[in-house]
Each structure stands twice: as structure tokens, then as C-alpha cells.
View 1 (cartoon, rainbow, N blue to C red):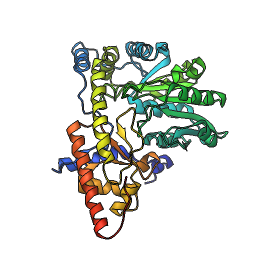
View 2 (cartoon, rainbow, N blue to C red):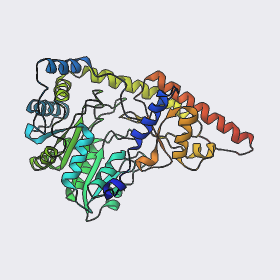
View 3 (cartoon, helix red, strand yellow):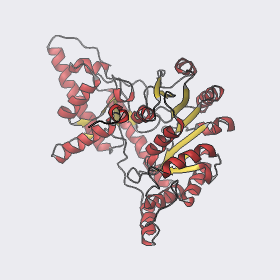
View 4 (tube, rainbow, N blue to C red):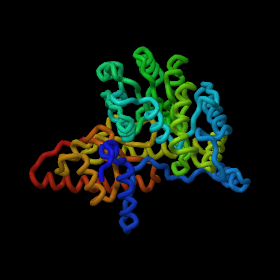
Length: 406
């Protein structure tokens, strides 16, 4: 059987793969703490679930909707953008997709031609590069500074005459980095000056901590907003990963092409999920704030504990999202393996903690740990990692080898 070049070259999602392995071990009776996937442990707020149930009971969910989403949902999204960002979009400038991941995928299909280059920070979410490649483009990882932020200098170094798009994810997966408004302003103006479109992946925008302020590229003036394609959804902030609703907001020309592709691919998102999303966007956001505070508490509890683990180095405390991204170069040396991917395997098989190799995000030598799990599970996971690393450190020391740890 001969597969397409696309199918042969695409790599399965590392985050989904690790999580699936952890779930399989759990089904086999192994007590694994799964920190491998970015999924809140909260159930969807009742006001949202009840809206879905009501829509079913009133016969609203049995039929197709427009491929790009219900008009009522587009209006609710436009109203939420206005409330959260202070920026106005017409409902016709919005397209709804089966999750923010599908929204990003269809953007790449609409805008990227063979050989086009798409800039993204190093590290960045695992699916950006694969989606670009599936569209025939070339993903280009842009170097970041000590805060994991792209700079104008690193953008200049990565730019070529084939550059088409720049992806900005703030708060960022996997690092929790949050850009300031002035930083976004400078990046946005650079893109405008170079005639490059921007993708603002704001899926974690409501999840910022410890007095951090969130800003988006669309808040950086009309010229930058017009060059920006906003991507967001309900999965993270509303704990609705299973409902699969994301959206794109952009100038009408881009939305028109996105809608055409959706009409031949997914069709409409599940109608019941759309009615649930309307309730999410129209809610008073108190449930979102409760979850945000819980994530903040988890971060503030787990961050100092992980800093104490031998071989784990955390220079920057995350300001948003729900991930920790420690440098584990010393841990690799202590354990006696060659790569961070091998360390991931040992942590899963020996410590029974599932984490993701930083190499999947473009930065081997790091690990991504999600603190979207419950606080007690997080404490247990860090305790297991600490015990695991301490055991290997003692072996090294008893063997007469000196290891410097943070």
C-alpha cells in the first residue's frame, strides 16, 4: 500500500501519544499520574451543560447548521470579543470550527502554499509545525530569549522572502510565557512592515496569574488587528475540551476562504456543542474565574516544589496557561540517559508519572508538565519525580561521580 507523502511525513501528536499511553497503563491497574496533556480536570460548568440539555429537549440539535456556525453563536463570540478585548468584529468576520486545533488547521490550508514559510517561536505547540507541513509549507522555529520570547532580532534572522505567516501564542504552550502589550506592539508592527499575516492563538488568554495582565495582538491598533487572525475557543478556559468548539476572527476575505474549506471538510461543528458554547460566551464568567484561581494556586504550590527536584532547572515562573517547562539537562546526566525522550520513558515506567518530551516542541533537553491535574495529584507527581531523581543521584554519588545540581 502506498500512502501520500503527507501521511508518510506527518508525526503523531506527542502530547496525545503520551496521554494515551498513560491512560492505557491506568486501565491495566497501574497508578499513573498523567501530566502529559493540557486538559483541565474540572467538569464543564453546569450553566453550559444545562444549555446543551435544553437545546436537545427543545429539538434544536437534530439538524445541520451553516458550516461556519450558528448565527447566534457568531454573535455571542463577537459580543465576548468586544467585552474581553474592547475590539469590534461583525458576526460575518467569525468562523466556528471543531476546536481551535481545527481552526488553526484550516487557516494553514487557506493561506499556505508549497514552499511558504511560517514563523513560530522555539519552543511552540506541537501541532503548528505539522499543520504547516500538511499544507505544503515550511515551519521555521524562531529563537527565543531567556524568557522564551521571540524578539525583533530573532525575527529578522528567521525572515526570508518566502515568509507568509507568524504565529504568536500568548500565554504560550509549553512555557506559560505571556507577552506584554509593548512587546506585542513591536512584533505586530514588524509583521505589518514586512507584509506578513499574524496568527494570534489566544486559547489561554483567560488563564493568567499573579497580577499578570493579558493582551492580544488585536488590541495593538487597527493596522495590526487587520493583519491578525484571532484564534480562540472554549476548551481551556471553560473546561470544554470534549465539546470541540473553536473560532477564527479575521477580515472578511480570509473568513470567506476558511468557510469554503470548512464546507467541504468538517461541515458544521456539532450543533449541541454550539448551543453549549453560546451559553459559555454569554455567561457571567464567574466559573472561569474560579478555575483560573485554582490553576494559580496549583502553580504557586507546585513551582517551588519542582525547583527542589535534583536536576530540574526552572529559571522563569510561568505567568499563564497551565504548564511548567523545566530544563532537565542535569537530570539526564544524573539518570545516565542520552536524551530527554529517554528520561520521559523512565519517568513513566519507573516513577509512573507521564510528562512530554521538550523535543516535541522543538527544544530537547526540556520536559513539559501540565498542572491542569488536581492539586493532590500534582503533589504526588512531583513527590514521585523527586524520589526517582534522588534515587539516581544517590547512585551517582555512591559511584564516586560528582554531579552539580540546581
